[in-house]
Length: 296
Image: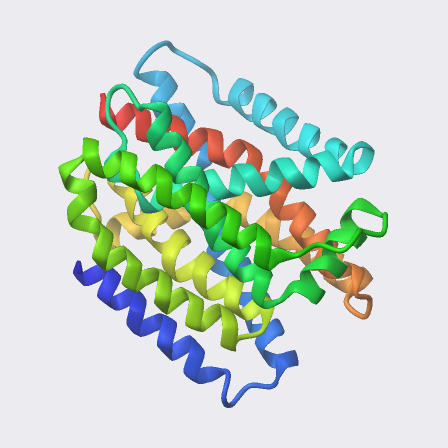
């Protein structure tokens, strides 16, 4: 285990320990707050990243990049308004790939194989299915509010089992092709067990926050800082934060407006995840391009 992953396990169990002192309401509030602060921050420098990638190829103006980025976000919002069921499914699959790619980024090569992409997506889907399975009723309610239709009975246990079988098959294929993958299997099984314990024993929002921040956002920010500035340091983190501040602040203000308008309504969770989805679509594409650029 690397030092960063050891730190992740310690933080995760600290988060689990907190649940013994925080009520469900405080778990939700704290979960939303840290997602707002760190989760949104990790996607707030997308424009800077894409500017650096594009500048290495052709000269491109910042306003043009901003325009295309806003169009991408707007399309995501429009999808959730006009085709909510399709948008939700797309959000889950893209988020799953994004989570899996970040966790297993060392598998990426100059020519990323379909096997690796499938594995990264299935890994992310397995994590989400595990979280959904332990909080099935609440997840079902949120999904119904997003798609604005009642859902037929969903057996998340069967979905988790099905994805698990596909993940196992894909893992066996990768094991035969990648020596590095074989060395990482055992330790990553430990991580899955740790996350399973946290998902089962924490409130949905708090459980998602622990994974999203500790296991995804913080490692992703470190990778982004290394890409932008050459190496990770506190000084470079402050450069990263200053560059992200305006976009991060406007995102926080947008979410704060949703909270003020809908804080006493259950629909806030649906609006919250819809907002995350709209900014996840372009963010995933940017990080994928960053990873490809690093591989080259």
